Structure formats: structure tokens, C-alpha cells
Length: 623
Ligand SMILES: Cc1ncc(C[n+]2csc(CCOP(=O)(O)OP(=O)(O)O)c2C)c(N)n1
Image 1: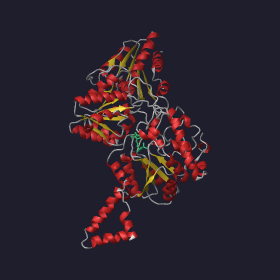
Image 2 (image 1 turned 120 degrees about the vertical axis):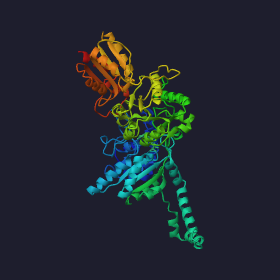
Image 3 (image 1 turned 135 degrees about the horizontal axis):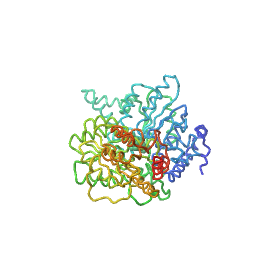
Image 4 (image 1 turned 45 degrees about the horizontal axis):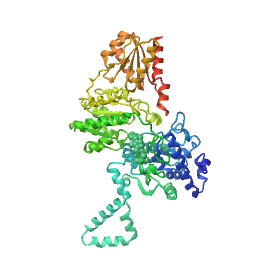
């Protein structure tokens, strides 16, 4: 029973509560989040860590007039529960249900749509500046994690904010974790602030400086310690944030409601850019998530009592198969290096990191740097494999273009979560990589039909002289046997899997098996199709496609990518280039929209990407 939570329909109801009732509310919200996510799956650990912080923010500030911008947005569940979405919260991440991320169209309290990291300070600063132009008075608060602060864009925004000097509040939610433990020099620096080493260093520096003044030095130190005001100047910590033009406040506990309320009420009255450093515990209040916050970062449904995930045992995931293939090849070739942008577990690099720590790099949430860093590695003779989600490589487009493709550097891009990802929705779908990589000269774009072909493609890419991308989907692989040794695939060579004279189904990646299922169904209806595993979006197997187009004259392409500029477009462009106009063609893929959250198979059915959808398309074309 959520006695207090169930009375809250908007932040107004929250503000009407006496402070002492907030403690009970904290417990109720944690329970509601745990119950819901145990069924729906979702970002558990990050959300449990910010319950007090979010309650305090809504208690002191007034959304939607005041703006709260959640970086990544994977910690917004308490915010959603307090801002009118409590009753629908059990629809979290389901089709037409509450989104797992802030969304402009979902609520006026969601000030900015997020899903990708490190955007909050930039967006907040823009909002502050727009308010200045309109002479409006309101508070703007960016809440950013220590992991997301490792992203270059966050620094670009701090750099800008420090000179604009506007009233911007940045809350640094420091739990020492990204998905895995946070990495990099900045993370060490934050620990130093927390343990008081920044202040001590400063004090020491001042002492050294004073000691350097002959005769007076020792006396002055003594005198300074005695004089209160002078002491203040000696002990005020100066952090890098102060140097950037922010007023640094903290660190404070993110789990002490009254301390949070007092601090928010105080900083509300301050002018200029403020950085409030708040310490939180990821997974707070649910022991399994506190202990293994990385596993409960983006959790599958789980049993609350034991903390065990309700995963179906069976076929390995594509990520797992990629991981095994990379380790196998890493053992044979010590030039192979693996690079991740804060996604060691998600991209399956954990094993490689464990076995070859000197050839493994977690660069933080810094996709752009990851790509250009890999360009440097490649020029130095290494064979970099950049393992990254399709959606996150979008951020490094110019680095792929300018730093890799333009110089034709041999780098392998292993794009996980390509295609429909499902419950994480529009911000996380990997539906654009065929289009944004295909247009780049020198880039080879491929997608395996199954995990054995993934192993071969990885081997081919690593040993290729030019940039090569391999994309594979989230979730289970096909369950085929993986050969002991990988083999090279001829670049630009497709394979015809069936023979039939009525129509051609050109499928790529995870759409090849549904195409085969469609062909089997069509055969029963006396329609005979040639199914081609295209393997390559670029270069296309021109010879085969032209031949089939001329011989059969009826083509259906199938891809789990947006249709604009994707695989089907490449095939149609080829036909146009070759002057082949008398072909009936139909492309199956995602239309020109952003796909919302829903179970992947439901979306595949809706857009005709499954076996029955392909059957329907072929029959329609033949009519
Ligand atoms: C550009 C980008 N790269 C990678 C991710 C995947 N990702 C989601 S949350 C997260 C860690 C964020 O850490 P932090 O900001 O400290 O928040 P916490 O989860 O610790 O609360 C990562 C790497 C992302 N959302 N966006």
C-alpha cells in the first residue's frame, strides 16, 4: 500500500506534505519502482539512487515553470511518479505506456527529451539564455551523473556556462559509477574532492608559498591559522568547477532529505552558475541492486525476493557470440585492441578486458574520442575494434567520416543493438546505421544472418585494409553451430539461399531467416522465390543483384533499418545506375518516423518485417 504516494497527482500535492512525511514517501516510491521494474524491466539502480534527490527537487522547485533536465533520463522514474504519471506507471516501457525516458510530448514536466548522455547542461544553458531574452524568472536545473560528465559535450557546456554567468544550477549526481565503475582522470578527481584531498592540496600549496617568504613564512602560517578570516581563505576548497566559473557547493549526501531541502532552498537564492555535488548510492534500498548496480543498471524482469533475473535459458545472445569471437581472435593476434565508450558489459567486452587488459580501453562516455583514438591506434599498427551500440555511434559521425574514412584507416566498428531495441524506445533504436555509414566513401557495411557469420565477418573486418562495420541485433542469436575457426568472406559477396523464378527476396542481417520462412510459406502457395542473404549493404553484390533483377524482374528488399538511405535504397540506386527500369520492386523497412517503445516482435509485425509481412509484400507485388 502506498498511502502517501497514492495521494500525489502533481508536485502541488507533494508540497502540501509536511517534511516528516517525506521519509515514508521515499520508502513507498522505492517499493513502487522495484515492483514495477521487476515486471517491466528497466533502469533500476540509477532510479533507486535518486529518490530523495528528486523528491527534494520537486518539493523546493516548481516544475513545469522551473525546468529540470535529467541527463540520459534513465533516473526519471520518481520524477514521473510525482508529476502525474503515477496511475499509469505500471505501463512503463510498454507499447503506448509511460516511456522509460523523459519525453516532451508525455508531460509538461519533462523539460527535455533524453536517452543519450551528456546533453543536460547544454540544453539547460540554452533554456536559461532563452529565458534571459524573454526576461522570465525561473530556475533551471541540470541533473548529471559522474559518468555522463565524462562526455565531451558536458565539458563544452560547462566551458560555455562559465563565461555566460547565467543562473544555472548543475547537480552532479556522483555515485562513482557509470554503468560499470566510472573511469578516467575526472573520476579520480571527484574522489579527491570527496575525500578532501583537493582542499588539503590547496592548503598545502598555500603553506608552501608562505614558507617560501624568508623570515615571515613560518610566522605568517601560524598567524593565519589564528585569524578566522584568513583561515577561511586558506581552507576554502577550489575545485576545477570554481576555476571554470561555477560556484562549487558540496559534497552533500543525496539521501538526507533535510540536508537536500536546506541546500536547495539556499542555492535557489544564489546568482550565477552553481555546481552542487551530491553523493548517492546506486541501487539504494534494494540490496541486490546495491551490490551489483551494473547488473541492475538496465535490468531484465527479476524476482524481488532473490534478485534473480527471469531470463529464459537457451540460445546465446549476439553480444555473447561477438564477445567469444573477439576473444578467440584476440588470442591469435596481439595487434587486436578493443575499445568501448563506457559499455564494457553491454558490448560484451568484459572477457577481452580480463584476458588482455593492455589492449582494452574504456574511454568513458566519449564515443567521439573512442573513434578518433582508434584512428590513432590504427595508424600505429594496431587493429582496433570499436564496440559500440548503433545508436551511440551516431554521435561520432564526423569522427567516422573525417578521422577514419577520409584516411581509409583499417578499423572495425562492431555495432551492437542494431535494429529495433524495443522497450528503451526511440532514443535507443539502432535504425539509422546502414544509412549513415553507407554514404561514407571507403566504408564497408555488413550484417550477418547469424552468429557463425558474425564470427566470419569479424575476422574479415579485422583483417581488412579499410574501415568496416558489422551490425547485429539485441537479444538472442539464431542458435546455429559456430565453426572452430573463422573464415574470410569475400568483400561484396552475397549468397543465394534458395532458387525460385517468381520473385527475389533480398534480405540483410537478422531479416534473412524470416525471409527464408516467408519463402517456405510462399512455396506452399506455389510461389517460388530466390532468397538472397545480401551480407553487404556496401559494396553490394552488383553482379548477382543485376542478374536476378534482369532474370526475375520482381524484387523485395528487407532490412531492419529506416528506409531512407538504407539497404533497399542502395539496391534501387544500383538498378537506376545500371539502367534497369523494368523491375517491380518493394522495400520493407522502417518508414520515416522515430519508433516508440514496444516489444520488438510487435513492431516487426506492425512494419511487415516478419515472415508473414514478407509473404504479404511478395504477393502484393506479384498481383
Ligand atoms: C551517448 C551515450 N553513450 C552511452 C550511453 C549508455 N549509458 C546509459 S547510462 C550510462 C551511464 C551513466 O552514468 P551516470 O551518468 O554516472 O549515471 P548513473 O547511471 O550512475 O546514475 C551509459 C554509459 C548513453 N545513454 N549515451
